[in-house]
Image (cartoon, rainbow, N blue to C red):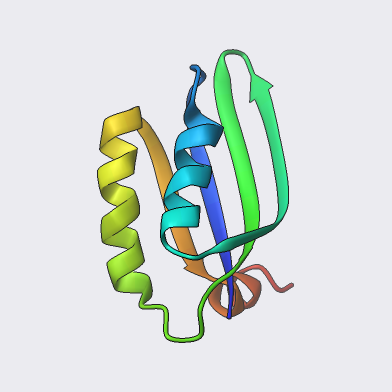
Length: 88
């Protein structure tokens, strides 16, 4: 199963490390990553491969906790839904 994860927030040390560590704990592989800093704001998007039995509701709960800890906005969603939302 494929997923898309995005992160937006004030830049600070450890965001990539914390998100990557959480993904590893959940047995989620990072397939591609793009990140940039714009006027002190960190932005990142990741393409992920998840276990087939992944529950996105449970994953959102996991990443909501990490969002609060890092003071950033993290979203994770099924790539099929992401693709459908962004088709012209």
